[in-house]
Length: 231
Image (cartoon, rainbow, N blue to C red; front, side, top):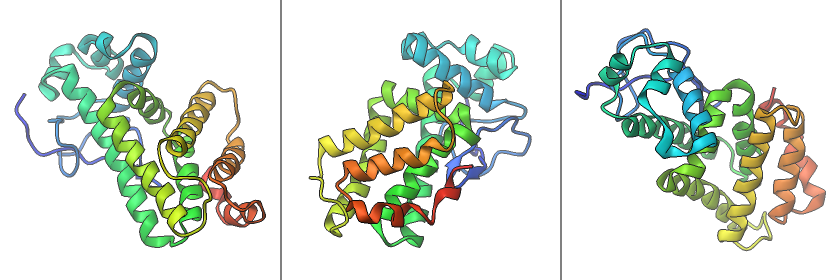
């Protein structure tokens, strides 16, 4: 497929929202896709997440994604040269949206403990406002090493900032990163399956802060200003 200008995706609280239908001329983000309206990216993302969870990356087919998006397989190939390019495009947009949210949060919130709390709430919020994106995010973290490393880098950097500032007692490194990311991912999956409620996100953030060794007396002070981050 010929590469042209990438597509603009709306964001919610710095995180990518699913696009029900793209109808404007391609313009702004996404390095891989040549998007020609209409293409229902949200439905394609949702099917991608389902197949990844059920059968793994090698089982994703263009026919399944095209069918879920409501387009013919030929239309899919007008937008993406292969399934791998589609997967890369979804991973790119999800990763970029999270990086933008993280950068924005760093600019406006100077307490690293508060940044972790808000960032975790925003990530969990994705399961509420953009379930297809949340499902794709969880599946791609498991399936794509490069995407997983990108996400782990953001989590690790946030933990390191908190340790350096004396806000966390946990030792920075693989164990702390695994604990935080694993907790967030499992919480997203549980919410998508209907096993938990939106309000449970606050308790997940309390758990994350405890895992990082935050002073128990300060946890409520950190969380209290930010409950609206999750609807």
